[in-house]
Length: 79
Image 1 (cartoon, rainbow, N blue to C red):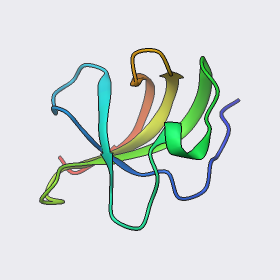
Image 2: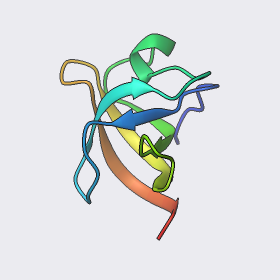
Image 3: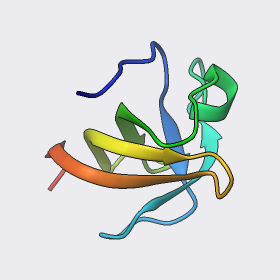
Image 4: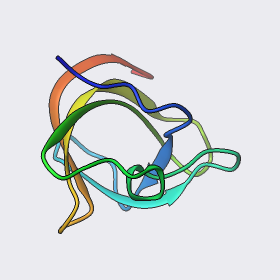
């Protein structure tokens, strides 16, 4: 079961099919670290490119030491 943390939405360092290294919060939202997501916690996520043309939602496991969201299940994306 994943946990929903309100207003967590971020821009990753890079796109692609690998795990997301969290870069910055989307304006008006917070990164997982800013919201206090504990290490190794499964969370609902939304990641989007800086220009908002690419996005993805799903469930990921947050790694606080590496500031990485490890994708578990992708729900939707802009493709």
